[in-house]
Amino acid sequence: MNTIFTNKKEILFNYALFTSQKNKKILLFIRLLFSCFFSKGKVYGEAHKFSFFNSALRKDHIALFDSIYDTCEFDKGYLKWSYKRAVNFRNILFWFFYLSHIKELKCLSIPENSIHYTAGFIQMTFLERLLLYTKLIINKGLKESIKRYDWENVKFLVTLYDAGEPEYFLVEEAKKHGVKTVVCQHGIFLYYFDHSFINTYNIWNIPSEYILAWGKATVDLLKKYSPETKDIICGNPRDEHIGSESDNEVIGIAMGIPDDREHNHQMINIIENYAKLKAKKVWIRLHPLDEKSNYVIDETISSFNRDIDKAALIITHITAMTFIYLAYGKKVMRFTGDELYYNLPEEICFNTKEDFIDKINKIDSVNYNEIAKNHIEFVGSESKQRYNEVFRLLNNSI
View 1: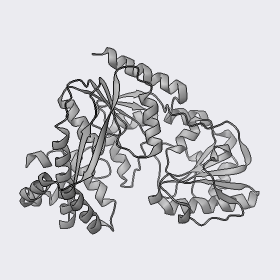
View 2: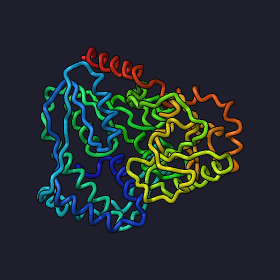
View 3: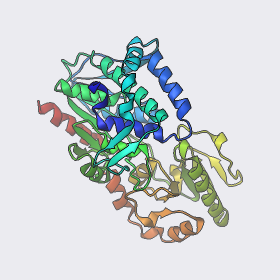
């Protein structure tokens, strides 16, 4: 039993995952149980001194990780992860064998330094206990599969994300074999003081020894919530191809994630109303996972256009593009909605049309360079050089 319920961070991380889906728990349980019983995963690939691993499917994340990979000059290669649909007899056995212990999940103990939850205990419903139990059984199966990989020739494991699965368990297993573990920042760590949002657990749940961070803002959070992690600022090495040209007649909107569609609608309404007053155009860049059909826009002034970096002003909400645009010298204003980002100055944040008009009239006095450096200190070739130097130092350390 101890092999399942000993890691409090793993338990709390997975509890936060399914509690964020308040109205879908029964459907989620059915999906989890099907995945538990009828899927198998394994890590494969030739072992190299620097082994890189990324399970993300998003094209922008893949492109970022590839650009980091290219900066490493030493023996390197990709590890890969595969899932297949098949009866997982091991997980089925685990699920029924440990089922009598589900009562131990009735009360969830919260550590002192966790995010969002006050230290103490959370009483879980029976359905929540089933969800968490099934997820932990899936995790146990992943751990057993990862144990089979031969780490003998691997000296460094580099990942793009390590707070979730399978990366978390891959990192933990690699450490048992004396492998140095490095995680690369893939986006801005958004910390909300009063909102339970799973992204913040990425800060608290980092298992890797090193994190290659984008800027000081991330490092400050890590010092508070993951002080044992060694942080090195390297910036964002991906070539974003954001030009310096600026069209004063265009306002761009970089939309947030599809789950935040309500705020996306509010943002569009405010900017469209302002654009009508000032006879400006509005270009809207959708999140990679979103679709045009989810939005109604005023087509007399607005259009969907991914090339919003040509706009004189770019509006954002919850997206790492906020800081990438800032890093490339763009003027950005952020719609707050009811989410308070931890470290952006009030002078570039707004919540209503009136608030937006007041702030935009003072925009020329904003020190955008200082704001940008705080979040992404290096970009492009300068960032690539930093990653190259870090890999060189790591290589020489053994």
